[in-house]
Amino acid sequence: MTVGGNALDGPRVGLFVTCLVDSIRPNVGFAAVALLEAAGCRVEVPLSQTCCGQPAFNSGADEATKPIAKSVIETFEPYDYLVAPSGSCAGMIKAHYPELFTDDPAWRARAEALAAKTHELLSFLVDLRGFRPQNVACKASAAYHDSCSGLRELGVKTQPRALLGAVEGLDLRPLEGEETCCGFGGTFCVKYSGISEAIVGEKAQNVVATGADLLLGGDLGCLLNMAGKLRRDRAKTRVFHAAEVLAGMAQRAIGEDAP
Image 1: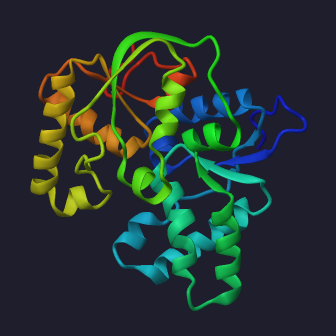
Image 2 (image 1 turned 90 degrees about the vertical axis):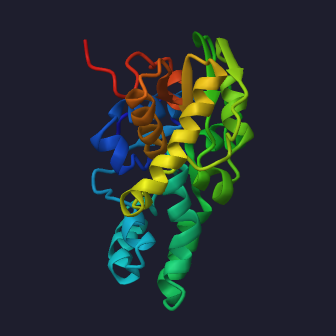
C-alpha cells in the first residue's frame, strides 16, 4: 500500500511501523511518514509486515523467531531502505537477524543484506538524508531520553538533538542519567517488575527535576513506561515521540484523553 510519495526519484522506503505504534499510538507512524516524505522519500507501508520477533528472541526462543524474521526479510527486501521509528525494532533487524541465522548461510546472507539497509528513523533523516525540519515550532522546554537499543546498538545520540534543535521555540534541557535505561526492556518489565519500577522511579525523578514541559524519545516502549510512571506520580510532564514534535503533530500527549 502506497501512503505517500512526493519525490518520484527519491529512495523507496518501506516503513516498519512496529507493533506498539500500530496498536497504541498510530500518530507516531503518520508523523514518520510525513517526515520521510519531507525528506524526499517515497514511503510505503507493507501490509504484510508483522512483529520483528524481538520478544521471542529475547526470551531465548530462537526457533520460534526464525519464521517471523524470514517473513520480515521477504517483505522488506524489495525496498531501498527499511526505516523504523524505533531503535529497538531496528536494532533487532540490523544486529540480531544475522546472528539468528548463523547456521543457515542462505538466510544469513539475506538477513545481512536487509540489515545493511535498515535504519532508525531519526538517524536515517540526519545521516542519510541530511534532513532539517523547516517551519516547525513548539514553544516548550523538553528533556530527551536515549533509549538503550538505539544508543548502544545503532549509535543514535546526536541525530535527534540535531533535529530538535531546529524546532523553533523548543528549549532542550539536560537530563541527568539520559543514557540510563528506563526499566522497560520489553519482557524485562514483566519478569522483573519490582526492579523495573525502581529504575523508572529514578528516571521519573530526574525528568521532573529538569522542570521541562516535555519528555521526548525515539522508542515508544520506553516512552509508554516513563509516561505511565510520571502519570502515577501526578507529574505535569507531557510525553511525546520526537517524531511527533518534528512533524508538528504533537497535540495529545501519551496517556492524555481525547477531547
